[in-house]
Length: 340
Picture 1 (cartoon, rainbow, N blue to C red):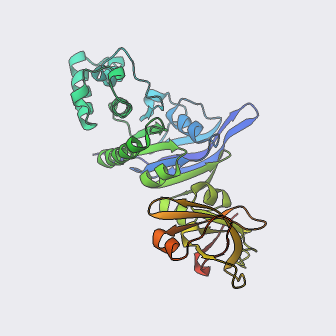
Picture 2: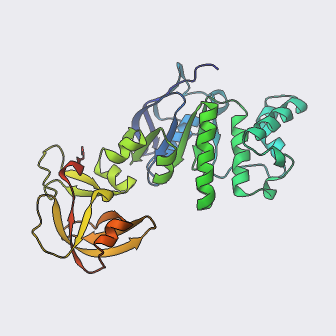
Picture 3: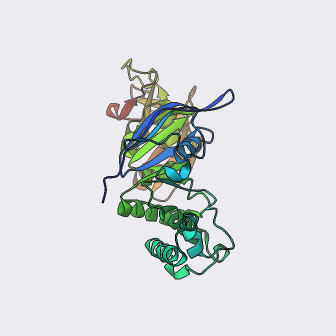
């Protein structure tokens, strides 16, 4: 197999009139990576994906695939393929002809293109449905057909625009596993747009957190979670409390805010004892039983609501109820100073 190419975005910018949707971003995606572009609506992630695909023209900057600058090439000449959020299957064509359609447009004879299409349907476990129309398929089955159609052109990079958003939660998790397995087998890069933190964490080798058209952090998922680069990343990823450094008595001088993971917090009922350098007085706002854990929300004067994620055993050893005063505490080594 030929060596797969890296993808590099160099000062990539997209403007719509006076509005800057993507603001001079730089990113290198190593060959064979599963990359998730993650962020809230309007952060620029889908526009970035569409520029890579060639469906949006870059205002400035370059898109490099391996040694080739593909910024000005039409979509079909880029070595990329895009799977759209709506799947966009032709309703009047069966699965085989849907998958074979791009080969038909390239002039490939009917027998050859249909044989290749059936082979691709086998790779996504849909060959038994080759003769069915899209309306006769479930959402997950339609997604597999859309995947096969995108992959039949042998792209070097597969681009996925929120591919799991239309599926129910159970199917979403199953298809998540299938996507990762397929990417590993094919050995090509997948670039996947999502607003789901769980999805990005489960799938990605590289998580790219975007905000306001810029990249806040690009790193492996464990690094993003354990060492968020900014208050925005810590809040968006979830599972963290963001505190002013002065309140947390961090005293490092490196940044105005710190993050402390919610599962590293301890909660003690009552008000006995003074708040120290690693504790605060508060009042229980909410208690949510989540199965293996219990989420406790705590109001502290002058701060946003803080949270502690406790195991069932820890919670049962010292249960609290909404409205009760508590002491929220943490260890100094669990304080992560945020860069900005």
